[in-house]
Image 1 (cartoon, one colour):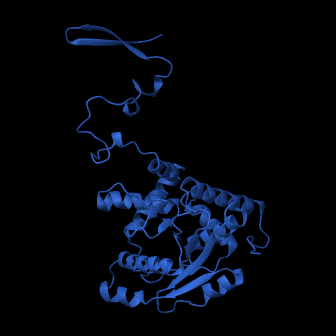
Image 2 (tube, one colour; image 1 turned 90 degrees about the vertical axis):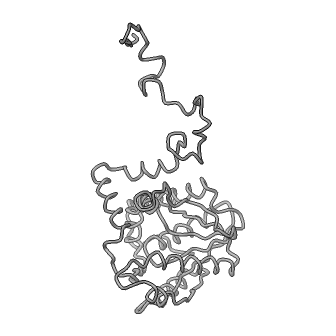
Image 3 (cartoon, helix red, strand yellow; image 1 turned 120 degrees about the vertical axis):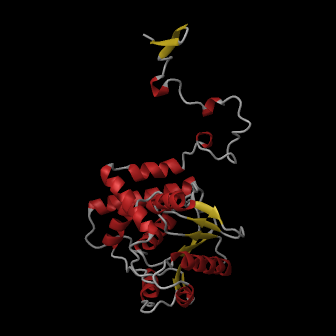
Length: 301
């Protein structure tokens, strides 16, 4: 039996853990991420997010009304100094099915990317190809990534600022070859809660040092911006995330999503409330008179 609790845990920790499990379960249910008989390849970078994802999925596996298989996978990219023994020892201690995949992406990135330039884009593309190939080899039909709510919101702003596109990370997507479904079970979880959970669980964290700290990465700038907004108005990040799932195409400008050219009469669901949200039971204002160049509305009593 896997030990899901740290020593000397508090009631606050139990509440945090239950909250994360509940949020993850809800995301899985809302998007039908995991189904009966699935084999889920759980991608483990060794960071706090992937550690939390694995442990939460293991907890859900124990209590779920369906049967599904989990395979933990770590990609050893042959970075100098990479502690290759840490995750295998951790997986063995948990007693779970796992694979260590070895691929020298480090030398490819160093060869192709000039010194000082951002390496994340090429590195992520190489990792993606390896993960997809590994999933097919193992017969895994779902691939679980550890991206959380904050990652999704940050990606939204990165695509707006630098790609002129209203696009984020979906909680669930199909790979281009339609061979696999990628899922993000932590889509409803905040980074702050995951970080707190990981600290108290004392996971064996492995930092990504392929690119150094790269403090000027645009993602870090967006993260800093969002965190400043959150300090100014708590709940703002969550509201932005909720907006991603509450889209009104008729109030945007993409004519591929909404037939603006053929629009002659607005549909009831497309119209704004007359006179704003103050019009509840009846009209707040009525047209009273027109006289030459003057038109008058009066308040209803």
